[in-house]
Length: 369
Image (cartoon, rainbow, N blue to C red; front, top):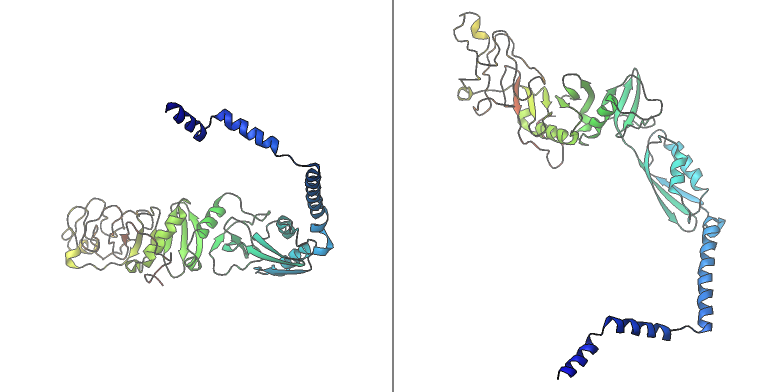
């Protein structure tokens, strides 16, 4: 019984050595006849000959020479020159050997073309789709204006309409901005949402505020450093979309997770006014009756003007005019002031928007025109 089981196991599970011997015997039995070997050798030689014929002659022959070129995607004042250069380079090629790198080189340096998509239509047609760099800002030096792309490439042939202005001392001689102030400003413009960019009139860099974007018929947006510009623009767009930010003179997004709108005119109901620490009344009562009706708290100003405080302190310094009173430390809804809370200072209150994020479209809503 044991012997039968062992024989069955050997047939079902052969040893590795037996498998190797069986494979070797089969390989020895599979041998090509002399005639088959000659046919195989001729087939290999034929494939090699056809490959050499294609590489060395056919793909560059006049039988497949480019005769018709269709170019799309070129705009701007330099469009005619770019088309002429592409067409001249393409007519020296064949549909079996269209060289995208050679086509790009024919355009020259700083052409404003990001990429080319080339499609061959055998035997004599070639289609070239041009992907151009788009201007995100316009550099201004004296009376001269030159559009610039997101990577700092100057686009002198493109239109600079609908993009913010950036003041520079001189234009770079090599057609591309180097690292420095101008490139930081261009990066700020490039990060703006597409629907918000046309509203930006100018972008500057100030010592106390860093990067600042000035909106047409709207507030200035204070970015600070050039870090996390996408998040800062998203926060600014969310604040602009909030109707409570209407009338703000600035939006501080240096902390994008807690943006602040300042220079607001907030209306307070009696129950909204907060007394106690952090609350005070302004200068109007201090003129006639002396100190009666005038209270000061830590961080509040005395008669003559009250400066807006909060998370955006130093961002825009809105002040109350003499003769006005403002409940410092009060926010809409009657909450006491804290870091970034809405603080009334006459005509210059601030309001924070913790957790603000951009709307799905990334655009400013009805809060601002």
